[in-house]
Length: 188
Image (cartoon, rainbow, N blue to C red):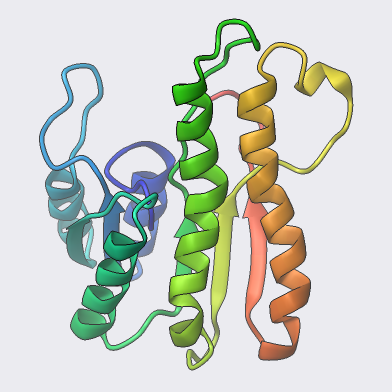
């Protein structure tokens, strides 16, 4: 699960842990953040307390080598990959004039490119899983301008994830790999 040190990623991990799942916490947060709770290590402790097995890994999903190393560690520790949860995301609810290009690049790099990179790296292992899934935290595509007008950069970065789901669901259908999206109904 990418971005599983806090928030939705950690909540998904804790739910899976109650079923005894083996969970890789692939996130950047190894040290506590001054404003946001949770690290890969606190999440691992909570997962194990809930009944799962955890492997906390520092992974910046924008870095292809870190993604590959994370996948290799997951396979070495747990013997394979059955499910990938593309949860990691960057957010900036700002308009065009207020969104620095550095922030735009961050959102595109994590949300769209990072989800693509993680799926690509996990694909060989998903192909050999008994019931493989990719779950991406992404909205249903909707071209109503209200979803773009206040934060176009964020919306297109998240819609990039949505389009990956649509394309990869069809691409991987013959392989028996399910690809789906999940999107909260309210602001998180």
